[in-house]
Image 1 (spheres, one colour):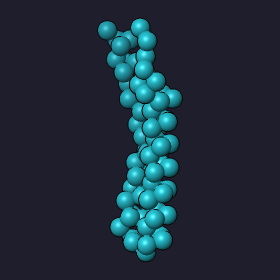
Image 2 (cartoon, rainbow, N blue to C red):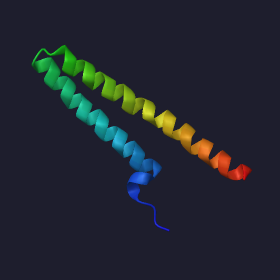
Image 3 (cartoon, rainbow, N blue to C red):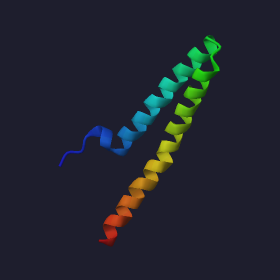
Image 4 (cartoon, one colour):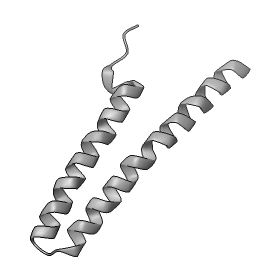
Length: 70
């Protein structure tokens, strides 16, 4: 069975990286236009992407532990 790249751990971290890069651009645009709302949106995107890694690790370990109990 072949696993798609975006379903793997590396794919998930790549998605988080792309979100962080997009947020960086949004923050830069917000700073240039002096728009605090864009800066806030960019910050929330970065925070969410950074918190995705521990969440994904916990979710995968939980799924592995549930599979072993059965």
